[in-house]
Image 1 (cartoon, rainbow, N blue to C red):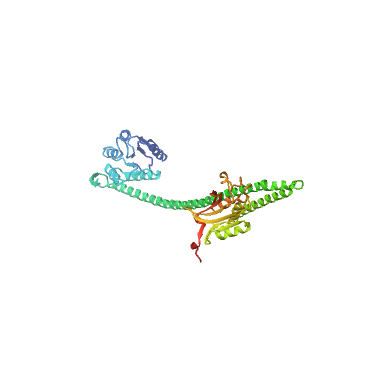
Image 2 (tube, helix red, strand yellow; image 1 turned 45 degrees about the vertical axis):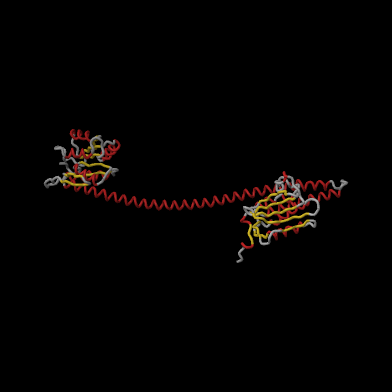
Length: 436
């Protein structure tokens, strides 16, 4: 019999995994134990014959001969039946416990194992070996589990040790599960916080992207507007102001001084009209849109440019309003000026309102202006038509700010027609207006 004070043991490790075997060897040799390693059950039986170990640690899952078979062979051997055997396994179910008891195992160790847990198991088994049972050996017991009969010949001490080991493992697993559950709960809380933070970040990023897109759109519109204004002012200077200056510088020596003065006046008048147009275009950036009566707006736009030889016919009902910039009346004045230019002969200008498939259209017709087919799309270009129609140089751009467009057509009888296209949302009728 071994003395309990002698802690150095000869341990036989049976493990087909070399890494696991060497790890166990390292742990046990650190406690000054002597370790022998066998790669399989057959090699283990040979090493037991060579030198009887104090205790055996054997893996359960091995090729050729598993740990249960090795355990049963040792426990039924006449010379080696009293060697304690610990089964090392990844599994731990009721079937594993019964198979272990049936094979005569003294205890279990569950992988992955804690070093102190291994030492505690070994110490407990060796201490029990030093105090053998005094009772008569128990008779084999047949146990039916999962429709199979298992014959258990283990002693009461072995059964008790394995049951206590099973309970201890269950308690430890439950504690680890509880800790894992608490960690999972904490991790879920942290994850939820991260998700909320991410949602807030995404919302903030979305708002910033919207603001950036809005600013980019506004910047592009401002850039385009500055380009239009710059081009308009440059052409006004080149086409109107400079010629007027040249005529004035030669007026004293010119025999046609009176004609030059008239031409200077014409140039300056055209320049003033174009400058006024540009000023209204600039103001659209700072003045809000409002609902305006179309008929009354046309009436107001006629007065500053009225000519006695022109008949104005306003056929637009009084209850129609348009949502546009305050310069909308100025646009009508510019179109009237364009239709009145030319010889001072009787002219008629008619205003009418029509419903189209998509939206509405305001039509301004005159019978005293003829345009070439190649010029129909040029009257509203600041790059091409300032010479002939300075009043129209920025009309298209001003209408675009209110979501409208304009086209020019020549119709039968040498009439010119301007068509202002209006979206449905920019027009309302008296019956649509609610009085609060």
